[in-house]
Length: 264
Image (tube, rainbow, N blue to C red):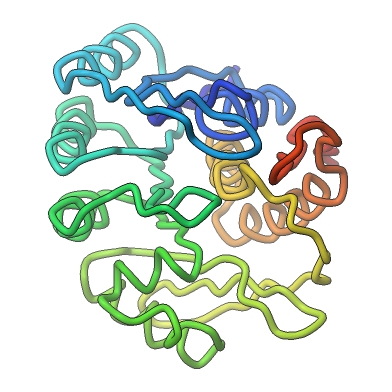
């Protein structure tokens, strides 16, 4: 049995974070494990409160899993501060964890910034070099590249951001959801070559949890020893399914539906 570990925050409404990751792992046939970094009082209308766990407890969760169970791939989501980022980086190296998908969660779906400048610096210095692949959306890519978000609105701007993030230490990265009219494109860069993964644009605001589920899909596929470019191609297809069949509940930004994934 293949396994995957998610390190991130809890979403009480189940649309994003740890809950969405574990659903995704299960649907894709992977045994899911979790280390929780923060607990959010959250629903489709927004975050009503956030409690961050002690750094030592976060490390103990990772260490407990790695000491007893295989970790074929893992991902990080919400890491709420620079000390947490540093502690997670230490645990990754101490436990020799590999196949790492780094989802740099910086903003809530409503647009509130979750990480300060120190945390962004810690991401660049400590986590990017450890990741097999980094999966920012264009707003997160702009922060990691130290660019204005308006500079990352086109494929040309996204290529520039990707090159800057690569120079900061990322081995591979994919900038998600670049809007080109009727097409949404994910732009992959390995430090030498760009690859575009286009899909038909879905006209909806109901994308809560899409970033979490996308990175969880990649993690589950990598855990199953699927090569990176094939995993990226499948992830673009799978997340389109999840958005198309979003959960029709809640009065705010409704969640995408991990249970709609249909592996071939």
